[in-house]
Image 1 (cartoon, rainbow, N blue to C red):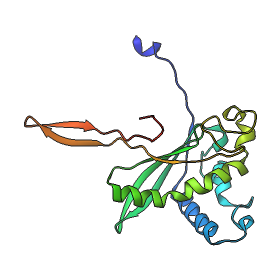
Image 2 (spheres, rainbow, N blue to C red; image 1 turned 120 degrees about the vertical axis):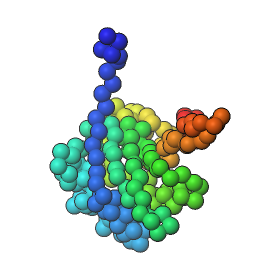
Image 3 (tube, helix red, strand yellow; image 1 turned 60 degrees about the vertical axis):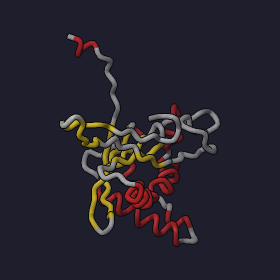
Image 4 (cartoon, rainbow, N blue to C red; image 1 turned 180 degrees about the vertical axis):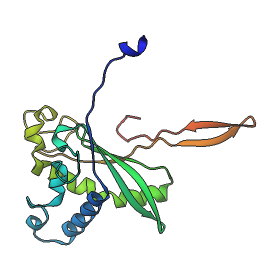
Length: 187
């Protein structure tokens, strides 16, 4: 019974929905055009309600989970395309899983999810992540995940999808997996 002797790894997850993505994009547009940031980052913002677990049935607060899964609908060359975002709360990194890979498409998708890397650090701070998850931060307020400024919850965006590529070798199909380097030494 080797199955029962495997170590048990438990990680908690919550999700968002398409409306969350639309709210992020709208808030980012307001952020780019607004001269008063208090209009953008205010306590009644719907994004904070999502992050607190109030907007989705069975949603959980982002301060009590390890990962947040986000379905994201993008437009690529006029066509609708779904991608999956996975935000690691512990590492404060947004991973993007995309089934269509090319440098041009990756550039379009990174532009579409830029709102997350700009807005999430501030919303995580407003949510109180640094108080509620003290184990993620050092004593001076810096993140344990990376070298950031004190009380920063930086959110780099990484394209981390491993997509099977169908090729033929010796007359038969063979599946090869490509791994995308994340840029920080990990694969």
